Image 1 (cartoon, each protein chain N blue to C red):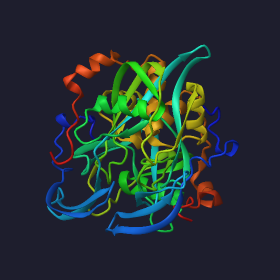
Image 2 (image 1 turned 90 degrees about the vertical axis):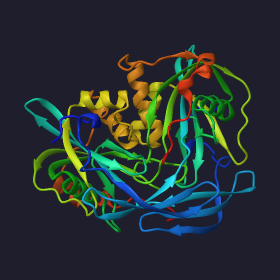
Image 3 (image 1 turned 45 degrees about the horizontal axis):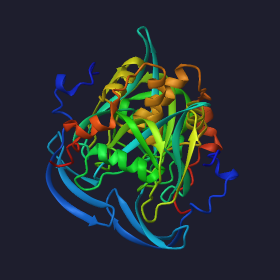
Amino acid sequence: MAASPDSENTSDAHLLERRVSRENLFRGKFLEAWRDTVAMPDGRTATREYVIHPGAVVIVPIIDTPDGLKLVLERQYRYPIEQVMIEFPAGKLDAGERIFDCARRELLEETGYQATEWARAGTMHPVISYSTEFIDIWFARGLSLGERSLDEGEFLDVFLASPDELAQWCHDGSITDAKTMTCMLWLQNVLAGVWSLDWRSAETCDAQEVLQPRKTFGT
Amino acid sequence: MAASPDSENTSDAHLLERRVSRENLFRGKFLEAWRDTVAMPDGRTATREYVIHPGAVVIVPIIDTPDGLKLVLERQYRYPIEQVMIEFPAGKLDAGERIFDCARRELLEETGYQATEWARAGTMHPVISYSTEFIDIWFARGLSLGERSLDEGEFLDVFLASPDELAQWCHDGSITDAKTMTCMLWLQNVLAGVWSLDWRSAETCDAQEVLQPRKTFGT
């Protein structure tokens, strides 16, 4: 058993796969899928089918109210799940869009809120077996309410909840969205003072080189 | 702003979408995708593209060692992410397979461990915008090591880590797999005594009616 998870300290040759060829399965309006033939570590070949995704951002918007700290959440019908889901605001990167621009845009469009301070917490991969998607996790505070402007065909409710309510819903199954539960892990540890955030003004984020899009699949 | 997330207490008519027609995009060896035309809440139509998935199980295997409590984890190359990922053991449901049978099978096949006690924690939806996938979350304890039997084309390392190490890796970006981070949320709250688990013997789980597959999409 390996003691370290750090691939720099471990030879991963016995795990790696290498592309031999690729074939487009389809290009839809939203989804694009490929089937690649790969060489496995033992030299044999296998096929890997996956969806190409431009990447996304999820935002944990925090408001300090007279009733204590609250989070801005959404209720939205999610067709593949056939349920109204509770989730943090989130959305896909537009072509060529910087991560921070996407975070700021999605928060405003979906909830109507603008934030004076932002912190880039980390990233997650929602579906590592069949999609290239990553979701960047951002915290936002210093919120002021303006006017939201939903995309055409987007219908969602915005509401506030306390961290305790959010935790309870993750526990009792009212929340099952993995990106929102992953944000809850971050929120819980940040509020406990165990994990720290690097807060910056919106202006500073806007000027940061570091906020270019992440490396995308195959580049 | 709605005060409650509970759809039973709230009319969701302003959020719901209804299928008008559907069209198969492709059926691969692993992936199957559809494009549905739906009627939106305002009566207009839109298309929804999504992947059909049979559902999956993830297992949080806990071992009590002389060095304290440890988790059984895997390192596996994930082609769409182009990285070796650290994750909890997990796998897809076979056709008609019961959830518990899948959990027991995947733990044994991938890690070689068998467990005397199991607890079904909850469920998550990894990608609510374009896949029907759910992942059932199980905890396992009372582990004994037998022999693993990986699927053909499956290459992975098994290793042990403490809850503190796991939390640190979720914080510093060594772990970005959303299902594993969601399990970390569960683990952290279970170990803190805030969330409880309903532990049962493997024999009891095996006999439980409740362990039939969940409702699948469109049924």
